[in-house]
Length: 397
Image 1 (cartoon, rainbow, N blue to C red):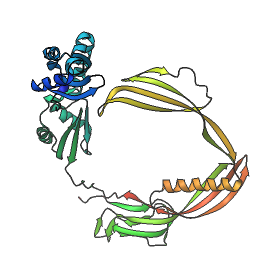
Image 2 (tube, rainbow, N blue to C red; image 1 turned 180 degrees about the vertical axis):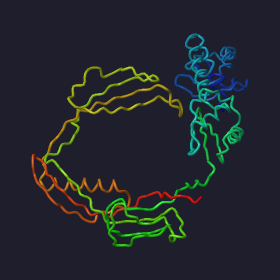
Image 3 (cartoon, rainbow, N blue to C red; image 1 turned 30 degrees about the horizontal axis):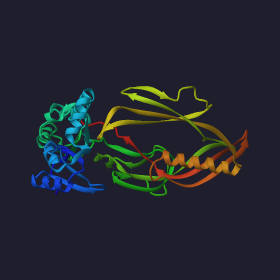
Image 4 (cartoon, rainbow, N blue to C red; image 1 turned 30 degrees about the vertical axis):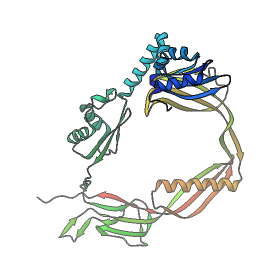
């Protein structure tokens, strides 16, 4: 016979029938339409079978009629679980409270995230969301539908072209698509472009204004490169000079590099401290005592507990204290010179911006003294040399 439906819910028992007429007993079960399944004959005129719990109480007349005896070997299903819990009332109450607490926690909004905003601040979006009832520790069933929340937020935030509200577990994500607006052009006063260093012009491009110098012209600091004044003395117009001017500039550096280099390395020795974090407080659980290292670095890792995708305000924090030591190694005079020149070139490229090129270098003077290599170096650099100079003029009455 096939297994009935909902056997786990209705309760199921496995019985062993012995003695008498076992086959007649099974036939009577079938005749009385009592569901029985997984009938398995055993040695010694015995058989094992499964049936529903309510049907067990109707077996006594059949057992007497066939001269059989019954022994229950296994009980499974909800009725037996409920009976065991009934004998442990405090445990059952605690289990019930646990599931109620889990349900209540999963029904709360724990985190509200804002994504996609640029000109709109996160505080503005969260303020508008709070007015619509979207905030942490809010019951999720009290919120309106996601489509309605999106429309209401768009009315409160007109700078957004679209707002989507998505709920995943206990997290609400507000996705913002801002309306594209052309950036307002700044109002600029008339100006010249002048040289900020002594240089030889290598490239000049005047987008607006009148170029005063040409390629290969030598200029001094403060000389006008692109004039913001157009026309002659009688008919003049002052504009905002725009363009790009590059030139060769010479930079003199004084470099000192020690012949003994120092570096910090890890020895491999370490110890850990373990903390339980509760909000803004941390309680140490492990790793008491003073650190035995003369020098060390500390690396901190925080592992918050999570419920689904929500980070709870407590967790574990580990501090790993790793012993360090300072190592020294001598370098040759040539290696010290190369190290100093590399650092100087890196400083030049970082200081004078994108497009800067170092075309050459010349060591003017060098010496070794007090464990260091000293050099005076002249670098030939191609760089942007233009800077702004506002024009001051009198308007006619």
